[in-house]
Image (cartoon, rainbow, N blue to C red; front, side, top):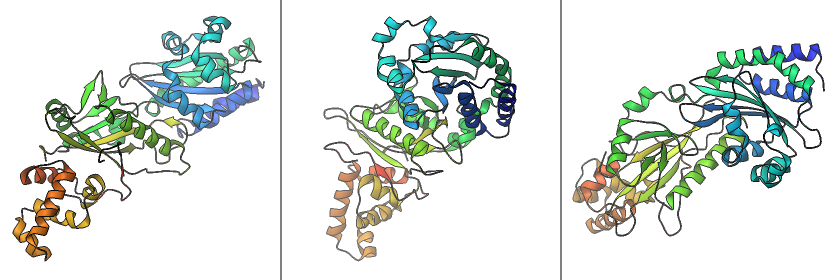
Length: 397
């Protein structure tokens, strides 16, 4: 360990560097991990408004370990409730609550913590207010035992500085839909739009989305989470997880994974209904790293019974229309009758009728007015060309 005054001064300087550069948290945590010779140091934030783990930064933690914790193990971590219950000036040492007999039979320790050469946790809460709880956790290896007294005293000296930096820079630890896209912008859109966490917690929905959710049984919000019919639910959230992986540690700075498409259809025997969605991640930073604030997913919904402009890219990507069918669909959306479309395109009238029948099948519509309403709900701005549809076995994406 290096608990010298020189190391302490270095940590204080790094702490206040975070006020001007939020990326400095990474350097600070790495320096602290080196000073204490811990297995890992982990800074976590839980957004109170969204009820979600919103921030994760770690030293000596592989990106995949961090993502494994975020995806699964945070939900079975027996230490989390203890950490949430502690006050700002209290320590939580896991060995005081979970003995060796507990550890030997607990899946979190056996499946996640011990295989990653970690056992003992000491944690303290830096901030607890109406916006978020920010926690710092220090992990020790099984062979090293709990955090020693001199290290705790060292951290108690440093903690007021860490707390001050967290309070001043609180915006870095919580989801901010205003900063990401702006409530006002989303609320002014005619299209139904939802902002959700990668696990499905609804952060925001505009009035159009609320109306659509009330009128259709294909989507619901249950206990604050977006619910889709099976098997769409699993496919959708698997893709959301892939999107987060791509922007957090795909290796490309500022990576933009583009849009993915989703087609929902009612089950056989239920009233016929169909809905289309297009979704991607909102990046809270210009350049994402393995750690830091997590992205949100923005989901645009389009329903055949609610609908203005047409984008041929979406026609092809979402519905599988051929180029010829796209031309027919676009002319229909402009109000041109079939005979005039045939004349304009220089093809036989029967050819256009056959293309229209194919368009009906691919878009799950039955009549021309219904098709036009669907087309007019698609966005006019071109989307990235690499739209990745969610495909389900035996179903058209």
